[in-house]
Structure formats: C-alpha cells, structure tokens
Length: 353
Figure: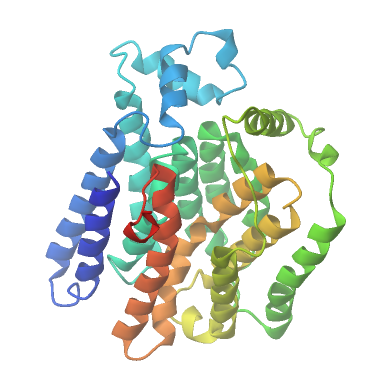
C-alpha cells in the first residue's frame, strides 16, 4: 500500500507540470481516474494495514453489541446495520466511506484551486493516509467541511451550516466547526495580520500555564469520547503525544507566517484565502495551547489543518517562475509524507538499521 501511494504521488507530481499542455477534457478525465483509484485503494485495503481498521471491522461485525455504544458514532452503527443486511465484509463499508471522503475533497479542490493536480499532491502526502485510510469517519466529515468553505466565503451561512450538520452525522466533532460560519472573507488588514501572527506566541504562553485536564470532562458526549481516548492511551492500545517544538510543527508555523506575509498575492488567486488562513491559525493555536491534553490537541488540529490541501498549493502563486513554486510545494509535501506514511508503519530506506 505505501509503495502504491508513493507511485501515485510521483505520477501526480509529474502531471502538475503537464496539465497546462493537456486539454481540459484530458485533465478532467485523469483527475476523475485518480479519484477512482484512491477510492478503490482505500476501500479495498487490507484490514490491519492501518491503526484503526481492526477496530472498525470489530465494530462492523458486532454493531448490535451494547459494548459498541460510545466507542463509535451512532451513524457508524446505523450504517453497519444497513450494510450487514447484504454482506459481513467490512470492505463494503470502507468503500462507502472512501467514496464520499475522496469525492467531497476532490469537489472542493476544483472549487478553489486553479490547479488540477497540485492539491492532490498535498493531499496524498498526509491527509489521504490519515482520513481515508485511518480516521474514515473524519474523512467524510472533513470533506464536507472543505465544501462548506465556499458558502462561508460567499456569506451563505445556512448552506454551510447544513454541510457541517451533515458532517456531524459521521463524526460528532464537527460541532467545533460551527464558529467558523461567522468568519468574513474580506482581505486581511494589518489588524488581522497582527492578530494571526500573535496567535502562535500566545499559544506557547498558554501551554505553559495549563497543566490539567479536568475542564474537558464536563463537556457532554465529547468529554466521554476524550476519556475513552485517554484510557486507550493508558492501556497501550493507542498512543498520542504532542511535541510543540517538533520539526513538522516548526515547518507548519514557518509556512503559516509565509502565507500571511504574502497574503496580497495569494488573495488575488484564492478568494477563500482569508477564511483558510484563519482556520489554519486556529489549528496551530489549538495544537500548542491544548498540548496539556494531547488527545484533544491532536484531534482539533488535525481536523482544522485539512485546509492545507488548499493553502499549500497557493505558495506557488508567490514565486516566479511558477514551476519553482510548484517544486517547493512538492518538497514540502515530501516532508509531510514522511509522517503520513508512518501511519501505515512504512519504514523509509534511511531509517533501516
């Protein structure tokens, strides 16, 4: 599986330099074909190749058990009940989640990017492995969140609300996305830039002051979910740790600041940029400020940081010639892939002892 993803990554990176030579018809055909391949790859993957598929298979086959209540969302149990009417093979359910998870994201890519393939390169580097191969319920929900960016940008809050509400059917954590309905898409002024820049040092200050987890236990339902994640970590069945000075986080912060500095150039090409950069700021802030509760910090950050699949390709708008900017985006994606493929227990050659 990891080698197939690597091959697709190389193929898609190559297509980035060819798409301007191809007709719209060919680009769309290749684009859809890539989407279908990713759906099949995720839907028919071997159970056990990722950290969560074994648990999903157990929940799928024992959906009727009272032990399943609370461990997965009701929507998963409902869908398991439905699919079990036809087959006990969990891959039917995997295909369902992969179909909508990939399709929703591919629709969002076309809504916001002038590129066909560069967003897919960024997507393959981390979030395909995380959402379509591991956190499959979040995969559909995050796709709906990306689709909600356009109506949020256009001020169509009710439409965006419906998309986020639909996302909450697949994962209850979608409710944390509701405040973003009120974001404005006006170009960033100096006040906003200062605020966004100040988010990161403020988060580090907060992370040194907060050291207890009691404040989350009183949150209805979500508090119970967090307690389950914490128990799993203590039992050794799940491992979550937050390093607020990790190389990947430092790189993410650097790119975040870079995108703020060159906001004017990006806003001309990406009209939803003001929304996306604010969401990314909150994602990084959450990861650092909530580091005293690793489970919450990671879940919130990874959900919100999905916007990088739209933001990172925009780096190319700030560099001339454009192909150099595209190469830089690909190099950044390779760094992220070093972390994404670890989710599948992939060992790179330089790590072999």
